[in-house]
Image 1 (cartoon, helix red, strand yellow):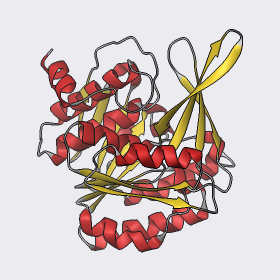
Image 2: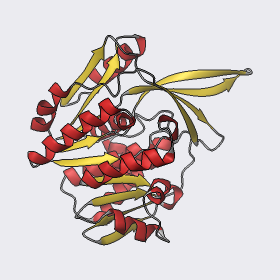
Image 3: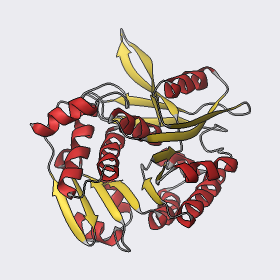
Image 4: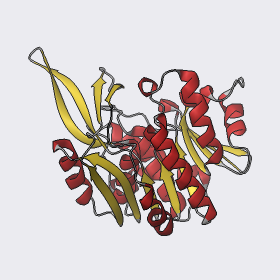
Length: 302
């Protein structure tokens, strides 16, 4: 089983109606999106995170409970609010984020759950939003240590958001530590360039994949690539009309992790699975619910 750990939040996606900005509420949070995507693909998976004891927290807890996860623990923190992400989309569906995240629940994760998570999981997938706060980093450190001690693998998606750190330098230093510790990593092409000064993306990728890691990089309309065992594979993507790119990278990672967990060893097929999941997601509003097992299988045949 793959258990995703970290932020569950409300994506408040804005649009203009009659001269006013109106926000629509969607369930989100990168590791939660990954968990939802894997479940929609029929995989055994779970999620662990925290929300506030408030209206948005109730919505998210109910939404998560309805997904049918094999493992689920969404606790409610009476002392903290639920995290919100305000999202605005341009005419191409590209998004810009602003987080409402002061004294919120996403990074205040009780360490008492770690043993339960590690015991149930084969792979622990770690979200990155918690890493901007010392409480979240302390939880992540203990979780990774416990997972590796138990012979379990750790997956990590950088998912860099510049407005939750004091500076890019601080973010790179913090993320770099977790990139080194993870066994399976995903970065965007832009994020990859933050961690290497090499002249081209493939060389950067090889640098990040040293030590036996599997490292995936999403390339937007250019598709994706992966480095495993010192070799690089690339896979193009079919162009689609994007409505909302929120959660595209999460959908990609849900696809590749699902393929790996199902025993697929052909890296081009694994990349293709991720590309299809990401493509289907951007044609749909919101980060969750853009595909299921049947729609992905149909797309893979085309």
